[in-house]
Image 1 (cartoon, rainbow, N blue to C red):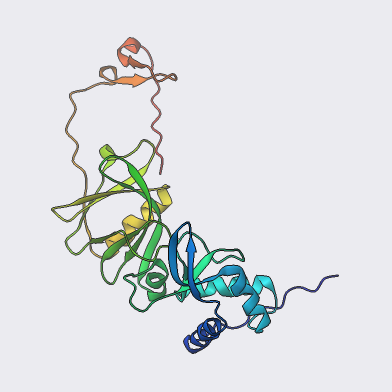
Image 2: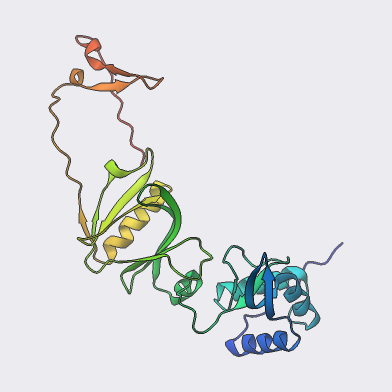
Length: 256
């Protein structure tokens, strides 16, 4: 019967991470590399780093070495050079964080302890919806928008100091869970992927004092059910007037 892997070792301190980096540089594991004619400075290969961690006894097994590499990513010490991968025992390029990188990265914000809600969401552009990863930094009252949860730099920052939150069903995709944010000049439409995520965002925004304004709907001229038009099972419109003087059952189904 095979013995289970020993438990992972304790987290590395910042000094130990610096020591690990210096050892990797001394062994020339960290160097400039080229991939498809593009140069990536001062990077190392994931599989080579795993071998290094095993031979220098930082870890005892490959799964432990991969877990340690991922821990270094989560602690914002290293990142994939194009922010497309978690740490893997593969021929992928990673680099240590430069002190002068723009940031903040997703990992750094999460480590800060003031992110109250974060999730994937669609964000409305000029013509299309774009998948993003968004975080609410409650202390700064800002929403940071990233391309993914591995990104080093935000693609946009929404300042909520003077923000107004309002429902925006008229601008949303069918069957979606959207909300609009506005600072009086600019407006952003975000679409959560489910009602639970939407509710978490609305509550978190309310908790930092973002004003909530219900969307105003224009009154309709319809006065009875027979004045409305609906779609049949094939999506074709039909008038409910054809059921006048008949008994009708109306079922109102909510999606939240």
